[in-house]
Length: 329
Image 1 (cartoon, one colour):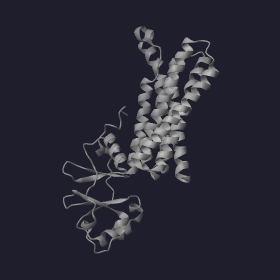
Image 2 (tube, one colour):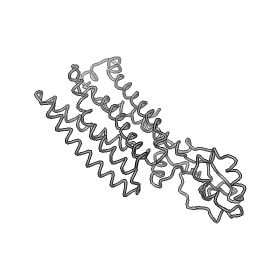
Image 3 (cartoon, one colour):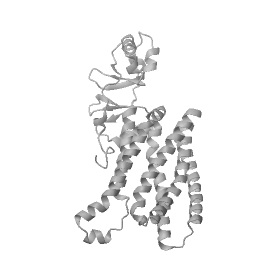
Image 4 (cartoon, helix red, strand yellow):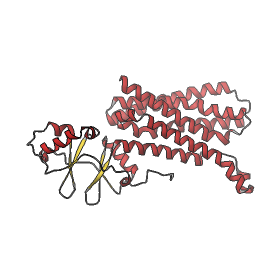
């Protein structure tokens, strides 16, 4: 799997061809009959997409509205024609940004002639988001390790160089798979509000960033000051990180609420960010301490281990908060 998958991949490869579609010349009564004959299929979609005789996208109508229309109504009188869409030239990253910006659960995809070739469904978007997160894990595994390999790089054999790096690559790869699998477990929660899927990278990245700050400063401190009072340092940094979590969480709560006008999503993002950043500090310091106790250089393994653990914990926090807020708020 390429490291940049699927961000720069064309949306055409992920298009769903089996979706509600009808001609603008069709009668409402015939469309209703088709819907009622396949209720299990149409229940999965929110809109029906209408095309011209040449398969060009003409507009959409919600399936609920179609069922409420009189049988003799003219479809074109009720068509919403200002449809937002993706083209086959758009990348996955661009498609996700469009869906997030407009708040859609699906996005039609057209070719250069404005012919409708399919849609990007909510489940497809969730899978892509999971793969992007998995890809991120692979990228981390390739560069987050900070082994002191100056002498080995200059004078070591190929065998020594390979086997000095491969453990961290394997750890990072497994971490990416675990994180991606965990996203899939909470697919039902994400489907309750599709917008939650698009904040996953923000939650994971910010927790990692806070943990990396703490880890870098801590490793530098214990390397220079051998008699550092670890308990005092640990408690002080936890207080600092908790304050940072409250500040960043409150900031994102306000920004998301002003942007989306959705109090549930804003609360989930704000609380998750606050808790994720607050928990990053003890993780980032505990791992170097453990490695040091084992007689290992903290700069060798702290990066990949902390990254994997923080990613998984931030996801656990995010989906737990999301599940509780969506259930009780």
